[in-house]
Image 1 (cartoon, helix red, strand yellow):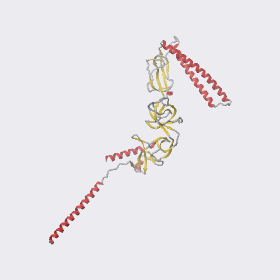
Image 2: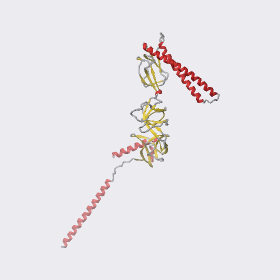
Image 3: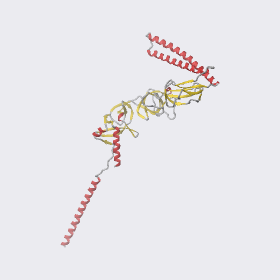
Image 4: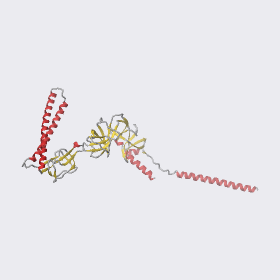
Length: 405
């Protein structure tokens, strides 16, 4: 009995020690698995780009704090550019005849100088043409008489005001200048009317051996339309060439429905849709006379001042029109800090020393050497003003490496 108890005790001890050993091995295996699973953690993605000082200097990173700025309330309008009618010249046939050129006929898109003789019309008159030409000649002679009377009246008025001004009477220098300008305008009108009479009278002279009617371009610009070619028979008054200038284009602007621009604003800032970094000054011309059914709001015409940006009719534009109201505070963002990528406007902000994050910038209107943003930034925040493109390249490279892993 004693021997049996001893044998059972030995067997129980062996099972106990075996269980302890198995438990230890299981624990060691679990710990080993934990160590192996943490040996190669996955690289986490981050919008923060960390660069040491040496890397920043190598890629030319420069930062500066944002400055506060204020802007006035404004209304945004959208539209397109179009040719200013006052900057166009249409060359018409003086009478019916055959169109002939003086050498090479102007080409579409070519530049042409004021006073250029491009050709002539060799007259071919029918009885009906002669009657029509006679009526136009009579009208031109009446215009000469009216212009002479206007010149005489303007001359007397200018002399009277000069005399009063010289005698220290109550006539300002501005009034004298306006009278002289009116006189010059009437003299130009008379000169033009006399030239028309001379041009129309020559073909009606019997057996005069009338030569061809000259064709002279009276305004410089670019050939934008060619309506006839040499050798063709043209009718009196038919357009032959259209010359346009693009340095004083008009912007036809549509105000969104529910908003209106008061008559007081006389200026606006225009931005091209394909080049939004260029700001163009514009002055109000008038409220459009016709209503476009596609745009139920107000439609305004603004004339753009000459600028360095190349302009063409049909370009889409956005206009910022200032209106009265309370001014809004924002920050001034230099142009060198602005980065355009994937249809958005971005700025890199230095969140901490050596840590850069890319942030969307909603630009409101141009400021001094840059743009003004009303929201999204605070004065004093440090932004990257040089090397933003290099930061974007580094960030895209890091993200690509993270995706591959």
